[in-house]
Image 1 (cartoon, each protein chain N blue to C red):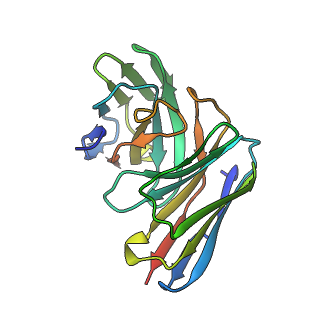
Image 2: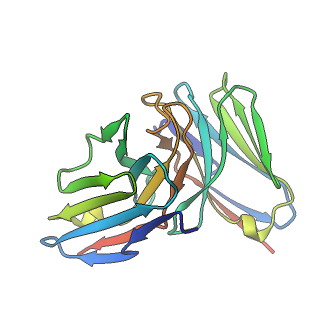
Length: 114
Length: 113
């Protein structure tokens, strides 16, 4: 499945580093998402970008900063992360509405914070 | 407790056996989405259910939505090793927006050949 791509696939970073995760969708969708998947925890929605909605989960720390320059690209800028931020970060896109919304996911970036 | 509870947490079945995975919400469901995930990879969309009593099938997988019970079930008939993976249910229950899905913790399915 190459509809939603994510780079890098794996990232190891120290707590003082700054890095960015990139997501690109080739499906012509109008909404993009960032999710965090930690071990033994449900998938957690972090951010939503669409023409109708921009949603930021209030529980997401400010050390995570999203950027959506256009409908095909989504970035997650990371700085001064903590070890508990180690997780699989998934990007998704959709072409739906407030009521109906099939999301298509990328393969994820496995992030390890040392 | 979680807003979306999946059961069982894990399931090991012999190839050819039928199985059912349940997803129960503590709040009103505005749409229920089933996904499959291979460990450490992205989610693959399986089915979406919107109306109470709705039932959808794809190959050997059938999903049903019982809106009154705020519950959905995923049934696999004659399981195969290719069905192995983590099954996740997601629903719009917090805001009603289908763009803000809440997910269950997943059911880990192992199919023994």
